[in-house]
Image 1: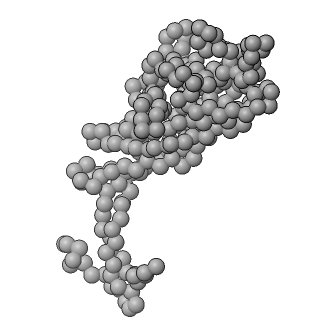
Image 2: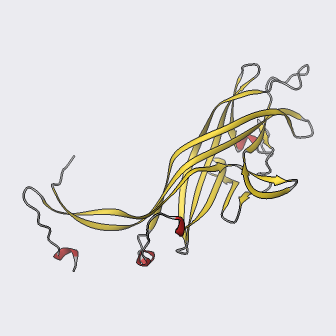
Image 3: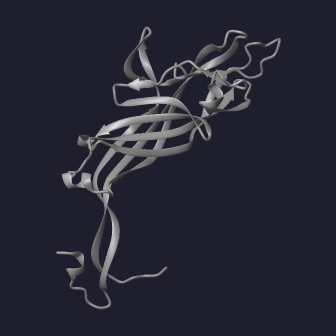
Length: 246
């Protein structure tokens, strides 16, 4: 029976309305997904376990008489900026989630001066005005966890960006997806970043470069996100209602 043949028992002032909606078939919730991380190692061998991203922040106030400068006392705030979320259904088997972003560190040094560091830009070895360097080898290789998750640095419109990718099997989604949905041309997923939190630790002395050596402070940074990915199709629904023009 076609929708034109369906007549709902609507009584005045209500009338039958055809509403266009995105019907949600299944959802994936990723709570406290660590999207900024490094890969732990045993010696020099990566072991597929996440740890904090390690950065050496240049000390401030360096002079001929104080070549060590003033170290980092604390990180007063961490902001995620230029955040872009994307997703893609892969071969009706899994969904690839993608986040691109920068991380801004608001730093207080031991001389009570304030600094702002934008990652990854300000820690790149190719940046002559760098304010930090990576201890984690993320410049040399993507940080990979298993076969389905990685974090890398890419070139983008806004300069250098972190790019986090994770593939989620559809079997991990809540809800039953009918096989007919995979032939529906309107089948899409929609990724929502619900909240972002961060964690950090300030450690001891570190150095960047060799000629000259730049003294800095080692900091460990992690960023976590609550993610919601909705998989759905376009559908029309019929209701009894009153059209309302705002």
